[in-house]
Each structure stands twice: as structure tokens, then as C-alpha cells.
Amino acid sequence: MSDETPATSATTTSAATTSATTQDVPAFGWSGYAERVNGRFAMVGFAAVLLIEALSGDTFLRWAGLIP
Image (cartoon, rainbow, N blue to C red; front, side):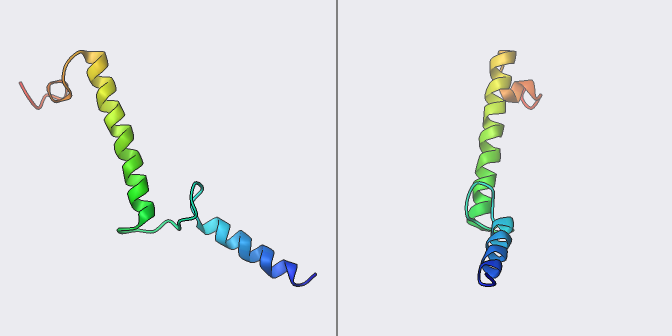
């Protein structure tokens, strides 16, 4: 019975330090986890630009005032 307690606490500790969607540990810098999160934010941003262009009927650069 004492053998089960350390295994359970080790499993709980490792599950708390990993990502919710993968087994990667969140880390700063050039890690696989950071690149995955960056890619997801890029996809959301690209979808937002497409939505702005569809709703306004104009390009994003003109809508943002970057091109006259």
C-alpha cells in the first residue's frame, strides 16, 4: 500500500506541469510548446483579418488606415 502513494503523487505532479492538450511541459524560448501556442494565435489572427475584410468589404490595410 505504501508503494501506491509515491506513484500517485508522482503522476499528479507530472500531470500538473504538462500542457492540457499535449505531454509537453510549458517552457519559454524556442520550445515545441511555445511554437504550437504561437501558431494557434497566428491562426486566430489570420481568421480575424479575413473576417474584417469580409464584413467591411475593403482590404485590411485600407481598413486599418495604412494605405490611403
